[in-house]
Amino acid sequence: MANLARKLRLHDYFALAFGTMIGTGWLILMDDWLGRGGPLGAILGFVIGGILLLPVGYVYGQWVQRLPDAASEAAYTAQVFPPIVSYFTGWMMLLAYFIVCPWEAVAVGKIAAYILPSLNSVPLYSVAGQPVYLPRLILGIALTLFLATLNYRGIHVSANFQKVMTSTLLLIFVLLAGISGVRGAPANFRPLFHAAPFVSILLTLQIVPYFMTGFESVPKYAEESKIFYAVSIAAVAYIAPWQSLLGRRFATAIAFEQGIGARWPVELILFMAFFGLLQCFNGNFAASTRLLFAYGRRRSIHESFGTVHQKFLTPSVAVVGITAGTLVGIFLGDALLVPVTEVGSMASALGWFAACLSFWIVEKRVSMRIVSGMGIAVSLLLFLMKVLPAFPGHFSPAKWTAFGIWVALGLVLRAWR
Image 1: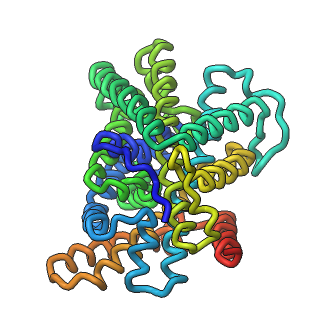
Image 2 (image 1 turned 135 degrees about the vertical axis):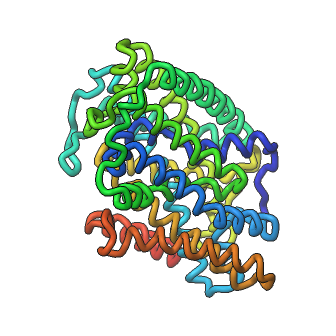
């Protein structure tokens, strides 16, 4: 059986895992976060979500030690469930990783157009009322092909690129948090919630799985993601009145421009966003290609996806497959952004639930079963919040359609094998 190159060190794993979790949501969707919960509601939503996911992270840590398989959730559930259950568990997690790739490819055009408005020209068509512009489309395609080339040529090349992106992002993040602390005011936080406190926290909690996805690859780094998101929300709401940011593109950049009265923080934030976008795109691209490769190697789908490049020792066919899927997603434009967070959250929660349930079944120690039981309860709750009409912000028909298309694609690939 062909094996991938084993060239990653501890800091490589950190960079890839952190990049898989932290991208540009704090910039692109800050107005959505504040609109869901207000500053305190959004902060508590991410903090509570991070705490609730600790048992899930612990279960993944145990699974990784027992079964270090790139198929991850598919391999875990295969220990106790029929093949079809194992297959679709992994297929859901592949969706959670892969769906980030076209998201980031679209987001790069949105960020670049804020600096160069001329990119919002030559409209080709519209999707859900959102125009798709030729220059931004070309930019997203170019970025996708660039990252595909990095991953095709080797995971070590990809990891080195990731370390530079992650280090730059963290340095600028510390600087911006300091600026907010000096120039902001507590009065900007009020009102603390956008609606009733419980509803505000709940609406934020629903999207936490999407923005926390990636911790399961290296469980011990899960804490960094919730801290990053909570501090970014606090910094934005502290430096400018948060209600003035609702419905505004790039609310994070606008907040610092209002709070300081200068343009340079905007340029710095957008520069930071570009690095964040690259690291998140690259991290999720690497994760999804490895999972697709594992499916091919296990012959769950056509075995060609399990091909390893003879020279670079990379999952070459899987890289091509994820690249092709990303390029298709780019053509949906800005209409892709918000719905993706909803579908990705549900897919992540479903995968976590299956992994925790499998561990609960195979584990005999009472203490471990208690922890895995907590993980089952948390992930099931996060899943139900997206699918049951009783909860605010549940799935719309359009999101169910997108989810159905992904399931249908999984059935086709499974039959094609």
